Every structure is written in structure tokens, then in C-alpha cells.
Image 1 (spheres, rainbow, N blue to C red):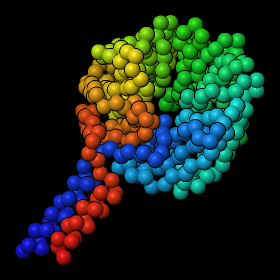
Image 2: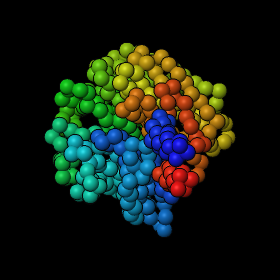
Image 3: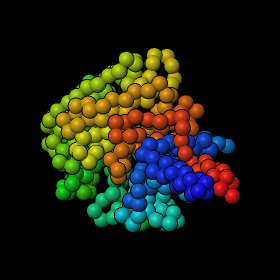
Length: 379
């Protein structure tokens, strides 16, 4: 009878470890500044740090509860970061970043084998960041970002499915500009690029498949835009901040006409939205951080908005974390990447109200330890 009770206890513990809804995984031996969900309900992360006069790049994949399954590292150039990572239709993924003066793309297959790597130089100007990467209908990819001196401005790059350059375009070469986000609305043959110019104006550019500007429209003159997504109702939502104080979310149609605009702030001096994404209920989950005056630390702020941009819940915490990306999971919860003040990354899965566990978390090792202890008692 005693053995049966102990065996039942073992099964119960196993269900807790693998059946819990919220979890946290820390990666103290790696760095990561961006991540994405894969088509197989896993996560792929990428980042880099300066080491030995070069940048050490990290790329690693986890399972559905954040446990590392595969990783790779390599040194690359004296500058450069992996800025964006996206799943591909063949169940692999692509990483977009820059090194020295070139745009740099890495394509991996579903078994994490490197299919190809591609360097593309933008003439008369080095690349400072690739801020957005999207697939194109012909199995290629399009990216936008920033160019630094001697010719500043923003750029667009189109590559084919083998990573070869199809075309490159430069905009605002006579003044400083940012290419912030690039989207292709569902069922639309055109692309939309969110851009900022040196006079703090936010522009929405409508582009054709060749990257030619069909029109541009000023969206903001007093807000600092951050990013843009295309929504399921074929509109656009833009995140921004007002004097670093207020978070601003604006929805516009495909002609750039404003549908709604909402502002949010906290008791902290500085508030920023690093990333947001649409949820299955047509609302939005946002990963924000707050900074006090004269203190180089960030407090976490997770906020859920409905379809009209109204806040459904707002979770702030004193945990010193800076979120990078956030997505809804297959079970309608939320997972985000965050870094602490030492740039140690972690993946955190919240519950349905955005609550975060930041102290107790399970790993494969702790689970095996529990099982070993129980088996010893049984024997």
C-alpha cells in the first residue's frame, strides 16, 4: 500500500512540472536581444556581446517551456548585432543583422542546419541597424533599417530565397532618418514602412513590390515612433512615446487616416514600449519598461489592450527587467524575452492576466532531481 501512495505522488509531481501554465527560464551563459516563436511552438533567440575585439553572436532554440534544445555561437567582425529573427515557411528560421558595413542574413532549416549566409553592402554608407524583417510572397524577404555616415538615412533591402540581393533602396539620404517597421497587410500587394526623419516627423510610406514610394504621409510631429504592426482587420497600429513620458498607441487605416489614439503613463519618469503584438481576440499585448530619473535600471510593465486600444490589465513590477519582445502563446497566455541589468536574458511566460513569476522556475535538471529522490524512497 505504501508503494502505491508513493507512485501516485511521483505522477502528481510530473504533472506539476510539465503542466504548469507559467514558467521562467534564465540563460546566464548566453545573451539575447530578440526572439520569435517558431512554427513548431518553440522559441528561437539571438543576441551578441563584445568580446576579444569582436562581436560574439549567440543563436539558440528552446522547447515550448523554454529549455534549450540547440545553440551555436561564433565571432563576427568588430561590430554588428542580430537584430531580427523570423520563422520561415519550411519550418526553419532566418536571422537578420549587420556586421561592419553590411547587412547580414543567416538562413537555417528545420534541423538547425545553416542553409546559407548572405552579406549585402549598401553603397556610400554603413548599416547601423536592421529594425524590421518580413517575408515576401515569392519566398524572399524584405528588411528596413538605418544607414550611418557618410550618407545617413533609411534603407530597404529585398533578397530572394537564396539570400541574393534583388534590389536596395535608400531614402532621405540628405538628412538623418530611421526605417523603423515594415509590414505587408493581409491581402494587399503593397508594403508600408514606418519612418522617422531628423525633424522628429513620423512618416508612413506606401511602397510597391519594387520598393518605390507610392505616397508618404506625416503621422506624428510631436511623438517619437517606435514600431508598427499590421492588424487582422487590415489596418495599422503604431507605438510611440511622448517626451519619453507617455506611451502612445495609434491605429490608422491604409491611407494613413487616424482611427483612434490612446496614451498611457506610469509614476516613473521615463516610459517606453519596446514591443507589442496582436492577440487572437484582436487586441494587443505590450512589453513596456519604466525608468526612474537618474537611474540606469528598468522596471517591467506588461499591458493588454483591447481592439479599441483601451487597457484591459496593466501589470507593473519592481523586478529590474527590460523586456524585448512579447507574443501570445498557443494557449492564449503570453511569453516575453527580458534582460536584467547585467544583460542576462530570460524567457518568461505569464498567466492570462499578465502576472509574472520571477523567482521560482523549473528546469529539466530540477525535474530529474525530484524524480531521483522519489524513486529512492520507493526502492
